[in-house]
Amino acid sequence: MSATLGTTPDWEAMWGDLAPVGRASSGGYLRQPFTAAEREARAWFLQECARRDLAVEEDGFGNVVAWWRPDSCRPDQKAVLTGSHLDSVVQGGAFDGPLGVVSALAALDELRERGVEPVRALGIAVFSEEEGSRFPVACLGSRLAAGVLAWDAARELRDRDGVPYADLVPGPGHGSDLLAEVGVFVELHVEQGRDLVHREAAVGVAEGIWPHGRYRFDLTGRADHAGATAMADRRDPMTTYAHAVLAAQEAARVAGQRATFGRVQVAPNGTNAIPSAVTAWLDARAATTDLLEELVAAVRGRTADQAGRDGTGLEVTAESVTPAVAFDPVLAQRLARHLGRRRPGPQAEPLPVVPTAAGHDAGVLSTAGVPTSMVFVRNPTGVSHAPDEHAGTADCLAGVSALADTLELLLAPDAPTPDPSDPETQVSP
Image (cartoon, rainbow, N blue to C red; front, side):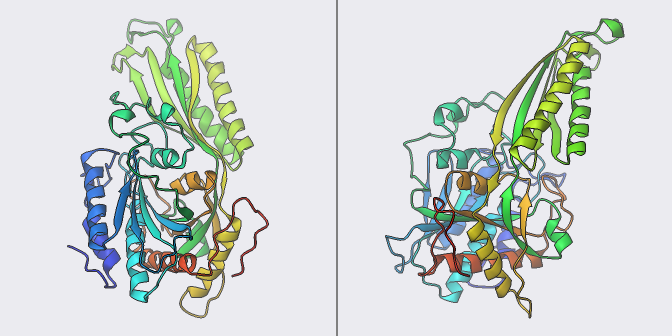
């Protein structure tokens, strides 16, 4: 089914076209970066942009922005950017990323139907490798585009099969500087949690992102026979790893934070052989940077103690650490008030402003100094990064309207973009 521009069901038609791409028989999604499924999703996006006569630019890191620059735009005005990503985690859900891309296209259609004549250009971005599912750095494309990750470091990254990242993208000096003219970024995303469910709100505005990181635990021991080797004679890194998992679980629960060992590699990976090495990745998140450091230190310390008892080796490497992100508070409160007034019915309460423990491209751009906000769409179960991730059609359409309202506000002639260097700036609602 193909969407028909200028009609109310645009979002549903586009979603119907995109939803089958990369879906596995399990119901989960396999849209890893630079694979056939992710390229098919990107081709879908480029086709939708062509149907809307948008000018598409790409940088040397696989990021794409489609620009709407009507004659009403003024060259002295910074652009407004929206969008998200199309890649997925392994066996991920349908909405994480693609919801923001489809909704951005639908919001643009709605702005055109309203007859909006913006003074600022509007860009719709698709950032590459947001999930870090292929290479060990989350938000890789946006980090490189924003200049918060050096190419010399990125080009050395390799996927699980040993393929270098530098073999898949041309790198700096190719394509466009996509963020050069951007004055503000707004990302719509499915909520990854149940805060909006508890507040009985279909849509909310993001307050900030918890600091988080990925840490590689390299555990080494001695391979041996599973039957012939007495328990007392073993140097088994799997035993050490098992204690690391329990340590992470306990430390996070006690502190009220998050810790997950979600990926592990074992060598030689034989049923009847004691492993010689175990490599595991810890995903840790906390409300503050200090709490994150304390959490990781606790897990590392208890694992090291167990390694001493097991006669195994331990090395911990921080592969990717993202500091806390506080989205522009002036922009967040302004959007919450504005969108609250735009809701149907007698309600005039501001939308809820909520934190999130999930990382996003919006967090990267905010860290790089771009005034940034996020719009969340309610997730009834709170499940994410899994096939059961979901958002209802009515809520998604409410999200499109909220994004269109947000963009119309920011594209207007009298809509100043917050100055990140001036924390005292106040914007009237």
